[in-house]
Length: 262
Length: 261
Picture 1 (cartoon, chains in turn green, cyan):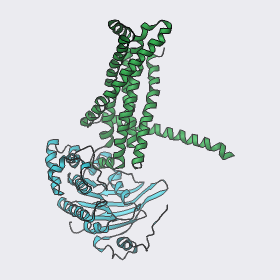
Picture 2 (cartoon, rainbow over the protein chains, first blue to last red):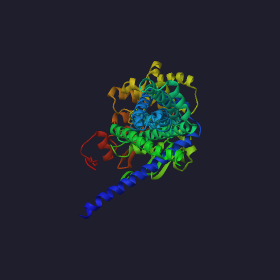
Picture 3 (spheres, each protein chain N blue to C red):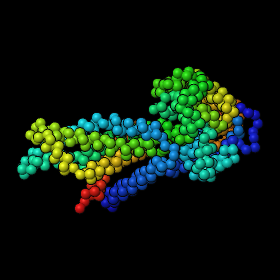
């Protein structure tokens, strides 16, 4: 009877300890990676490769997501606002939602799926096939070679993707607004421009940069610490994507609170 | 190999201990490898061979003990000095551990490029020169590791291990996964390369034919301790029941297989 009561508590305690241990390990890993960004040498070639992988090859998926989100947003807000005769606010709702929230969050989630998984799988495979140990025997610090350039690339590339996502998302809203909802093109764009403030764009770009850090950090961390062959690599990949996605959503709230709480 | 032991061994291990949880993998390893010699470490699976090498390479931190190279304890050195000693060490991993994302020439010259001892342009020529030493054509340099057979990957891994002209080289089961002829070829290349460099070699293997070909000295590790050292030529007739059982591959003897731990 006692065991029946205590077993769930013990499991809860084990879970809490494991979570704390992982948080500590991620924090130490992040600090070490950041320290390599300010200590030469820096592997610019690998930074370039990771930057192209994140910024260029993620562009189609982020662009499509942004366009369709802008279109849906215009349609939904128009039909919703029609109940209050507030259809004129559609352009403003579309641009503010995209720049402040949906642009960075959706781009972050898309990149988490593509890049987080890819980094975790690549580095995880290197771990289980001794390639990371081989780096050490070849006078190369794996954190400097594999982790630091990828994290810097994520921090810089995601805001650029979000700029593109913001523009294409607004264009998606404009397209539906002018072709389907009866807005005049110039008036829609004027309304968009008038309502937009610098803080809306800047907050979105700061969020994007933080999300880029989270995605690349979790991808490299999970890959770097993977164990046990193919199954370990698969598990590292799943953990990287799930953990980055949850962290993106949680951090999004914290950043929104910091930027916009009254 | 050079003849005669010198006063300070190239590699000296004293009281090396390492446990993973409750499992004591190394239980006081003591070993001397004289400069210019080729030492083969024999032992069954899980006996501590790979962990011993990883402790020397700094890939695993031992719990206790001394790892000396040229009389200097690596474990008490500042990090930079330890890295400098590491720069003089080469390693051939069991599965090659070639970098999939890099072409062969970049794999071969990776250490030289990392140490900025060579430009990328010069590295291609250098890679061709080292590949020739392991019997591969210069054109192999443009291929990726996934495009090579197992034997070719092993040769490229050997080329990578010797390219920076290390003065101590470790070989982790160099013939595992190869057919007997390719195994003999790789052993021959290892002996040639080590001789050419005048390096000290430490190999771990279960393959007795390979051990006799590569080594002039041998040591047997069992349950995390070195239980015998002697000339590799005597393997099978050492007078030590444990070593002779292992060398002859006999089922009965002092070594009992642990089927379940």
